[in-house]
Image: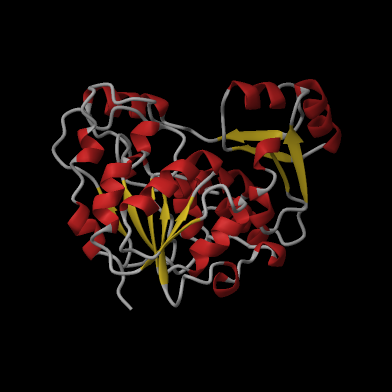
Length: 314
C-alpha cells in the first residue's frame, strides 16, 4: 500500500512509461487497488522462473523498495540501473534496543520517493495516495448489512503479531463507550473474536464481517465508514486513501518509525493513541507473538474513553 504513491509519482512524471510491479503472489488481490501499473510479476513457487521473467523484460530502471536478500538476488546480474531504498535498519535497532530516537521525522513514503531522484524526480507536488475499489467489490451497506442503518464506524481488529493487536477486553471497553453503529472487519482468523465482541456488547448494533469479506470488500466498507478504529496494520494504510477518520492504536510499534497513515494533503481528524512513558517501548519494528515483558502495558493501559470520545460525531 505504501508503495502506491511511488507508482503515482512515476506515472505523473512519465505518462508514457511502462511501469511494472513485482511482488508476492499473495498480494495479487490487494494490488487490484493500484493505479497506473501496466503489468504485474508475481513470485509464487519458482524463484528462478520469476527471475527469468524479470530479466527478459529488459528494464531500464529497477526501484527496489523492499531491499532484502531476495530482491538483491532478483536484480543480481541485470543490466538495469537499480536503486535501493535505505531501510535504516541500524537506526531502528538503536531505537528498539536503546530507545535512541535517531529515526528521521519523515514518513516512509516520502523516503520511498527519494529513490526517484535517479529518474530526475527531485520533488513531486500533489502526490496522491489512492486505492481503487473495483466495482465488483463495492459493498452496498444497506443491502448487505440491513441492521446497520445510517452512519457507522469500522473496527479493524486484526494484525499479524499479537503485540500490535488491541486485546479483546480493551475493545469491549472502547466499544461500550461508543454511541454508533459498528462494523468489525478482519480475516477468517479474527471471526471468533468478532463474535465474542458482539456477545460482550449486547446493547450495541454490531455487524461482524470478519472472514466474510475479501480485503477489497473490507476496503469498500472502510471507505464508507465515518471513522476507522484500527491497530497498526494494513487496513490503516488503505483507509488513508479515503476521507475516513483514522484512530490508530499503537502497541509495541510506534508512528516514529515513519509508518503512520499517509495523508499527503494533510488532515486534522486523524489521531494516534500510545501509552507514553513506557521504558520498554518500542520493543520491535514489526512485532512479537507475545509481550517480551509479559505485561503488555502498551495496549492494556490504553485510555478507552479517550479513544471513544475522539470518534467523529454525526
